[in-house]
Image (cartoon, rainbow, N blue to C red; front, top):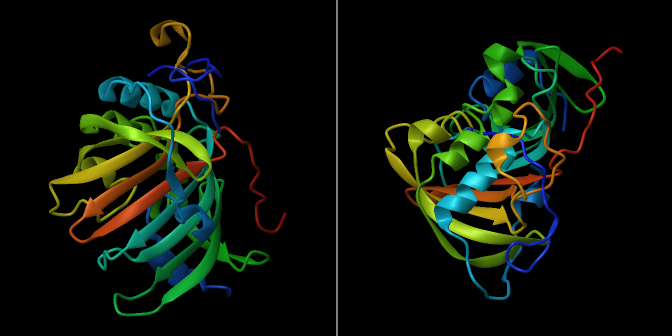
Amino acid sequence: MIDSMTRGRGSRFGRTSRKGLVPALMAASVFAALVTGCSSNDDSTTTSSPAPTGALPDGAQIVQESSRTTQTLQYVHMGLAVKNIPSLPVETVSADVTNQPQGAGQAKGDAKVRLKPDADFTQTKFLVVDKTLYAGDGSTYSKVGDAVQIYDPGVILDKDKGIANVIANVQNPKVESREKVNGVDTVKVTGTIEGTVIDPIVPKIGEKAGTLPITLWIQDVAPPSGSATTLPSTAASPGTGPNLVQAVITKDSGNVTVTLSDWGKKFEVVKPGN
């Protein structure tokens, strides 16, 4: 999925940015195979438009900066949408995810999944608290089981297996252009990624896949003014900096779109029954 950094606000390139209740047993079978990642249908609808041209950054440099920024994130909203990859048991996922408290990450959101390969998709809401997964309709939840064995939200922001690691392991990154994605000024970067690297975020996509094409849209803002290596690695990201806005991983004739937003925005998960 690198050190903490103080985010600058000025653009390095002359721009600035920003139903029904599902039974516990069914939910367990879903989330055991469900993506360890999570955005609403709105999130998965990308609005892209060309941004003004100008001097473009080095691909390796901006990828490194984004990875460092992402590694120190503690809160994020993540969206996932699958298109034309029938082997994945999920169509959309939307959730707020945190790796706090350390070792017992929490999440809340909803997912559209199918319980069997040839079944219709079913919508369910879920949350994770105290390492326990619950599924329900948003007002009533059933306990599913140990989240570590079923769905571990902390992986999303895990520095070794999460999004930061994915960004850092993009091979042959090449900056293509500037684009506005979901209202945010970004730099578009293309490259490839090993399936084993992306699998913790999108399970099964890497099966027998080898290397997959990936495109990143990274927020077009300035890197930190000082050297990242001198900053404390334990400091939490305030949500600014060259954050990843969107990633698209292509497999055969399909793709998975991951969107990130609300970087560093805190939220709470209320344990069912409390």
